[in-house]
Every structure is written in C-alpha cells, then in structure tokens.
Length: 81
Image 1 (cartoon, rainbow, N blue to C red):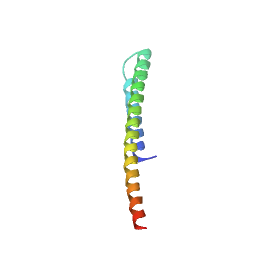
Image 2: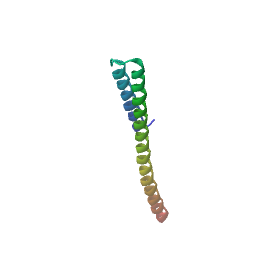
Image 3: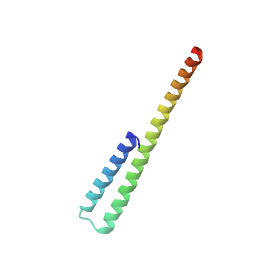
Image 4: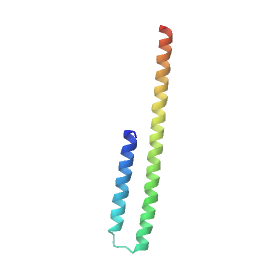
C-alpha cells in the first residue's frame, strides 16, 4: 500500500466510525437510525470513490511526467553512446 492509499483508508475508516457512533448514540428509533446509517454510508462511499478517482488522476499525471523524463534520459544516453 502506498502512503496515499493508507491515508485515504485511515480517513475513510475514521469517518465511518465517527458517523456510526454519532448515529448510534442519537435518540432516534431503530428504523430512522438504520436509514441514517444507510444515507451516511452512501455519502461516505461516494466520498471515498471521489478520493480514489482524484488519487488515480494524480498518479496518472505523475506517471506521464516520469515517462517524459525517462524518454529524455534515454535520448541523452543514446547521444552519448
């Protein structure tokens, strides 16, 4: 696991635990509590998916930059040899 994925996992887990504790200690009926858990779970999943998508885009950008740099290095090595 990379550092970014560990951070995203930790943030997601923290949000889930915090939301679950907040809902479970709220004075609502069981049906309403389950609805709230489902709604917040869906929001959390959406947030995690967005974070993963953002991370993928960032990694793609880094990959492109590295590929260009490697290409330049290879061209310079070909000129030397």
